[in-house]
Length: 284
Image 1 (cartoon, one colour):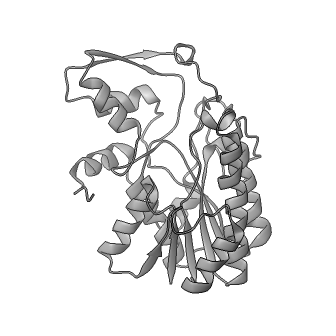
Image 2 (image 1 turned 135 degrees about the horizontal axis):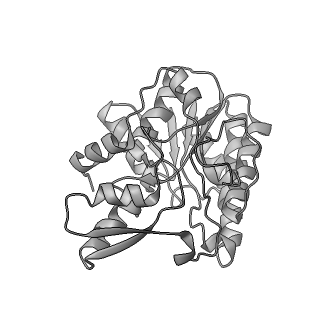
């Protein structure tokens, strides 16, 4: 049996609909059904479901809030919660797919170079630190795990950059977007398909990086310009100093897709993914 945590979130919802399309059985839980920060509650659900595979989508992702008012909750969910899930997977002999982030790196690699799966981690934010501690908990507890780092996630089932740009475009004729942070967007559908591809095809366990592909270097400005290309809104590039934030943003989030591609999984470009995303039949 498959168990999905964080099933009402952006990725968890996408994953549920993907499995529904395939008529696959699963049990989906969110905080109301299983508070992952409470080990006894996790064990109770695992004892009932007896999963053989767990997609761990539950996470605290409010990057700025994690620096202060959300710091304790960030740790409770991303570290304690992930430790509890990993321990339960070990007890009930389930394989685990854990979704992590480019924020485990320091973001300072020269533009044009990519982060490899075995590069040294050096998180610069509380969010990145707790996600890295989550990775370590999984690696130290389990032999059968996939840790998938991703970045710049967008999809139909939650707040994200695409919806933010579209909403701003309704109110403004000109938008300014940072042009000195580099990376690749990731459609939740592509990520969900990769998660299931690794597990169902029994690919080698370990770390992977997954975003959509790109023919050339991409910034948030490039992403915004593509989102709004069929509108009359003017998108202007600015540097990050124009948008100060509590949490440091990586200047280079671009992760190598070589290991993911070597599995045989075909990764569409982010432009292709964006066009398919627009066509998606949104289920609410």
